[in-house]
Length: 126
Image (cartoon, rainbow, N blue to C red; front, side, top):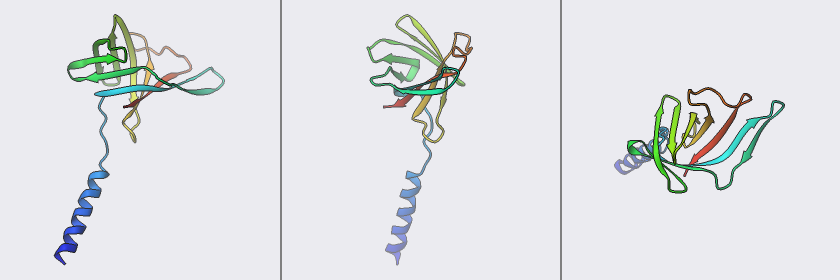
């Protein structure tokens, strides 16, 4: 009887560990996999093969797939990337069900929308 209770307890513990919700973190390697937008009449999504890569590290260091190193700031939903003498600004959102999928919307340096009809790059954690 003791063995059965122990087995049941272990099964419950292991299953609860598996079902824990993943928390979002920007740290890691992210690759662009899709581009979505609208031409005013219809919404479209295009797959991206061999898309842009950002590797976000501790101490606000960012690298791209060419090996360029720069810095980033991420606060609230605002992301600023300084890489190879080029500044990139985005608003960032993520999929709450799958936080290893983020959506970067390009914006101006004061975080104003660039695409009137909306546009977004989808990145997946690698």
